[in-house]
Length: 280
Image (cartoon, rainbow, N blue to C red; front, side):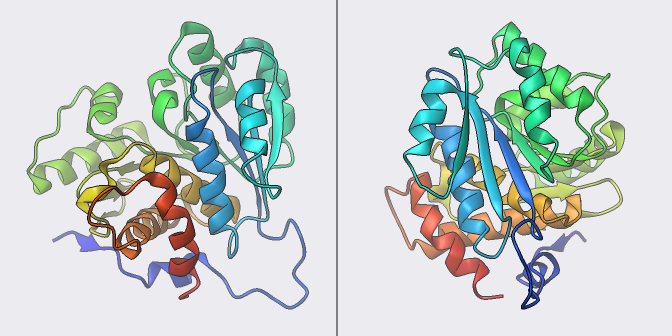
């Protein structure tokens, strides 16, 4: 029988802060994402991480094409943005992305980046060189190949992205899905958080399920919120597995906390994140 995540996971990832804690004690997160068309995904990553960092990461910075970075900068004065020239993130930006990563403790990559060849190429190059833990989400999943060591990352696919990643189609049977996620985590030597009606998290050694959430969380952007929460937890130097478990739990509980029965959108989750983590 596969264990289910409970609220006890929150005490594992949110430590009691000492009175003399100061900035940088609880992590610095870099979010890489966006394109001319898509500013929402990295924006939601950042806002979710910011909501989570009320008891989480100390600094959240976004590297994105200029239009996207400028839009995100207007969301909140708490966010730091670095505008990259052009409409897409490309190989010419690799040096700057690696430079921005030097003082960070975790990263999130993929949201809204799109899948053109130049962008996929820079994502591959970044993931081959980066040494800090990170979240590989959305378009970044399409950039993965056998030359990238995934050991220090959490992958967050939905069912179709899991197929892209593994070549394995998932059906509705939970036992079958659990088996395939566990096998994939072992084969790829990584941690996988499969998003779905029931989330499945596996690092091949441990496999658990998460049942928090509502049917109204199918809207675009709720996965971006999840990735932002997860990045915030990784930035605080929690383990990959514990961070994935806690992020899935928090994201689902935030959805439940909205008490929405219709018309739930991703931004509805943001104010609820704090309510969930403040209960620790």
